[in-house]
Image (spheres, rainbow, N blue to C red):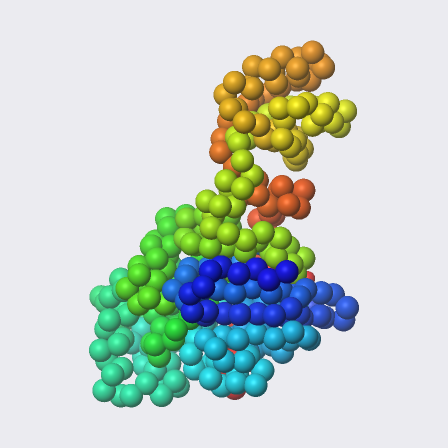
Length: 336
Ligand SMILES: Nc1ncnc2c1ncn2[C@@H]1O[C@H](COP(=O)(O)OP(=O)(O)O)[C@@H](O)[C@H]1O
Ligand SMILES: [Mg+2]
């Protein structure tokens, strides 16, 4: 199955791209295409294969099978051209702490052969974009986590890449800083027209930032679309009932003609129905009749969490990714 997103020029095209580790299908025959200029999210739980997928796209890891083009360049046969045309920000800060922000940016510009006369102007433009113009001369070790991430994003853009890859850009940051990073990501997509591919295990991040998202689980894409499409695709409302309902009760509810789906998770029954507000009294009456103790009830529109739950029967666990991995990958990339 080819998952396509329209007829615009393609930033990424993969064809049955796979990566196996000793029989483990970390990325399992993924075929997708991403339009230029999109903020595209790869959304999935820890271990889903997100980092492995983008590691192949940025040429840090070789596919086991399948192929991919990035900015029209083949990731195995034209790896150099791929690398020059992309920017990357890994999960963990990989700046030189002893250097100033300016020095970090200049180092990167030199590494990527940005002409000397262009460097200053480009750097000034980018630090403004991420709101760090007042901190250029500060040593990076005095930066907060959020400032470091913004500086890394700016650094990833110094050489005018057409695509920026962000692997879990807000992991480990506080909610306010995360929201700030989301704004910067959207701003630079608008002002630079750049394609942004980000991985995340945060549903809210995908929902707020991405124009399109692919939900990944066990190395496979299980759903793709805009966050709105994904959520609307489920249809109806979700009534969440915190209760001690047993499996028999869940089955009874699932058998009702007006119930679209029932999932039980962590002591919560999620019942998907049309016109939820009218169904709450019916449901509660039914629970009482079956001797179920109801602690609380809430009504909401489906979220991306519900989409994931719908396709996998599980919720995305809030496992933190492993920062050590990210550091190792960046070193490997820089050595090339
Ligand atoms: N170098 C490696 N060797 C063996 N297994 C790996 C390696 N890198 C990743 N994996 C495994 O591949 C799967 C996908 O990992 P990863 O791409 O890091 O997922 P995500 O980024 O979605 O959390 C996991 O089961 C992980 O343990
Ligand atoms: Mg990862």
